[in-house]
Image (cartoon, rainbow, N blue to C red; front, side):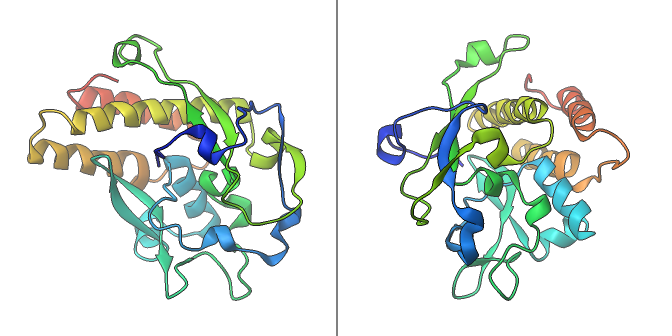
Length: 235
């Protein structure tokens, strides 16, 4: 989810690459689950997140959406996010001890915290060019995690993403796609067109199961191409 305000107000004033060291290590949280409470609808998931959760829990995307996840509108586009429930507004994946029950296959937004992504502004003209895409760096959110005496850790180690270079490429592809979809949704679009696009995005990228015997990223790109053929806005 996009945040408003100056980067200087929420970060240490630095931008990091995946190779850099950042003071984010918290010693395994030591039982703290503060970041798993009160997140509202901000813990937005991408297709890889839902695929991993489905594989790890053995539950279909539909069953996850009926319990642990929910759908909300993000700048005109319907996307899934982690559901916060109960009086404590806790993530539904926390166990009785307040620990993450899906840690090995936790979503990217959880792996990232307390880091964020800073996307460099890219004009719509550039985005429409072949291969045109945004780029991003990481930044440290200094007011979000209450753990004291954090240690330095390399960004790529903190994220624990296999083949992180390919993962970052995917993140840019998804971000670029959402930027265009949201621009389309905010334009001269009828309610019926918007409904059709949203339903297709949900089905194409989240609800339709991925073949676990094949590379996820290749399947994602195939679906992007199929969506281009279906929709009337350029990807």
